[in-house]
Length: 121
Image: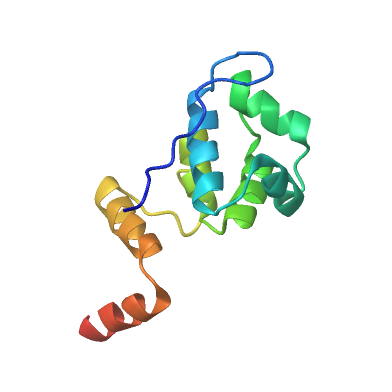
């Protein structure tokens, strides 16, 4: 039986609560099987910057969203959306909620599953 992972809701050092974007990012980092140090190493983002996002409510700049997306191997629009930043008009962005929902399903599939789906279309 697998255990459901629990993410911290506050800083162990300062006691500050995790911001909404911070909670989203911590979840994505945990899904990769990384800790915060590994994420910083993979993304090139300073640990102090990460702490500002997690506990101080600061949000990444659009360029930095690209660094997050690259490290987490996800589309940049997902990070922009999580940060509440505009992304309409960016090339390759799904145009509406239905297309974003389909994209979300595709992201969760293996390459083999996507190939099989493509063969059905």
